[in-house]
Length: 257
Image (tube, rainbow, N blue to C red):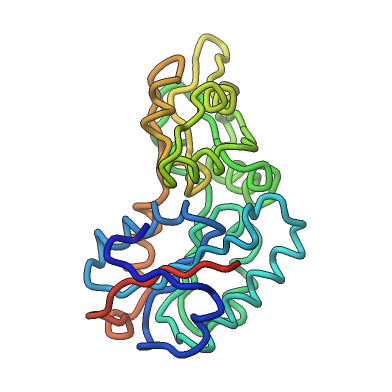
């Protein structure tokens, strides 16, 4: 939950905007709060509008074309009323599908979240790393193109986890995390190849950083966990017009239902 934020329903959010220029942060649930957290560290005075599209959770279960259409319509509808200074798609699955389409219909910067394959390729010492993401992100051409461009010589375990996002939602709701299920989900990340073994794991979903402590507990050996959130916040700072960002307002947290 956003510290000091106001929570309201999606229907109410269309009544009227208190100001233009908020940064719109979108995710299917609360995973994008890992990105929101980094944005606030770099832009502490910025007013954010966090939209948790709970009615559509999880995005990974959607048909690609239907999800693209849904997100574009949702962002356009919200933006018409709230006039954001930038849009941050704080979801890997959505970003691999909608960034091009959103940038075509939006007049403000659109920042996406993509698997941190380039940083992993730069940081690995063994040449073996894993991308832990949703099944949707793992199978996208976008992910394959990143591998071809930045890590063609590396051995990469692509792991499509089906239940990690829900486990993160459990944790953030105060429920106990099922460590046995967690261990089963991440086990395929830990591989050995030609005497080398996984030494980096890309967290390819914005929900996953909230489970890092638990993942470290059940991991068979220590690895470097690569969280893309700091890079996303840094990119936002680079592309948004500072004078367009609203300040002096509490962050808002909206839910679709």
